[in-house]
Length: 413
Image 1 (cartoon, helix red, strand yellow):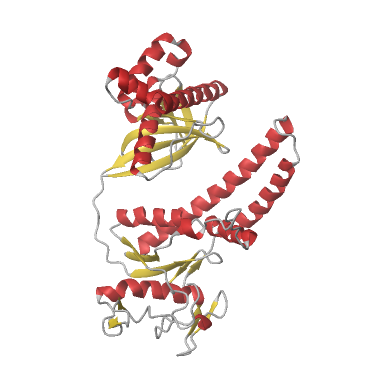
Image 2: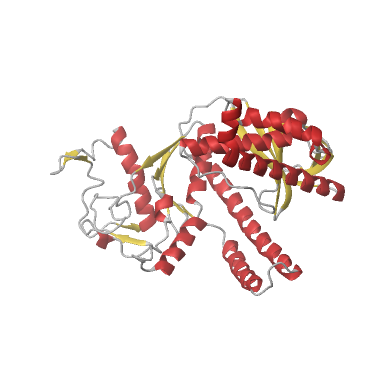
């Protein structure tokens, strides 16, 4: 069994939009009240009752609150319980050390609520339209861009700059097939988003640069508006729409590229990049201020705009669904290593796009050369090229492979 998310654009009536706003507001309030209760009164509660303040205890108090407050009872109880489950999971992730401490939800940012799958039903209107029945709201039309198959586990309604959307979490029966497709190495970069070891280069759509210029211009106009005024809110919505449009184009491109690669290749090898460390700020502290702060900030924006981590996530689950594997190798010196002879020399990297080995004279596109090194680092240990790459013992006693020897010129990868 595999889980997948299917997102659709909703087209509610004015009455339904009002219901959506009310549902989101009440669920946000329940979440914030429960968070405040856990932060300030959990010790007092444990002392008085002898039990922990968790989801079960707060769901019991939610029932009492609904019986005494009519406008809270007018909203589906399931949505409010799902908000409490979200808070409980947020605390569990915090105590496991994988997330920060839960923070209050804000209006305009966290406008969402969720139903359980058994409470919603879908009926198809025609080839392009369908409607979903939501408890205490009724039938809401949505654009049927793909068939909804599988068992619906839950349905999340969310508001953003795009409008109201619904996302179905469905569970599908799936048998992992065998995959005999060839392997490929992928180098991720800023100038070229993805470079393959077979010579292909893929870049983000050029329309994103145009949208970014419009967004910056709109942001400058927004900075001159009086905060809280109607003109300010109108310009803020324009900036949000431009950001949402860019995100939509980027997400569509990433999905199409990752699907294309997952269908063509059985084993994809990428670099094990510490993206959070690579995009850390260079500001420093008051005692030891950083250097080249603006240049580093610009580099961080360029790296994050390429969506390296999201591309990796999409590629991983699409490969798993089709019987492929996603492998990671060390990223050290992949751009300074010659894919033909294995020599590491920073002088071989002539420019961003040109690689010319100073030892054997091998010439190639720098990103494609790095992609071939990435592929070789994964296959060398699998004895695919055992006749060409033999393990050797370095002076430090560590076992190395010739495709990653000590650098001759220093520098970064």
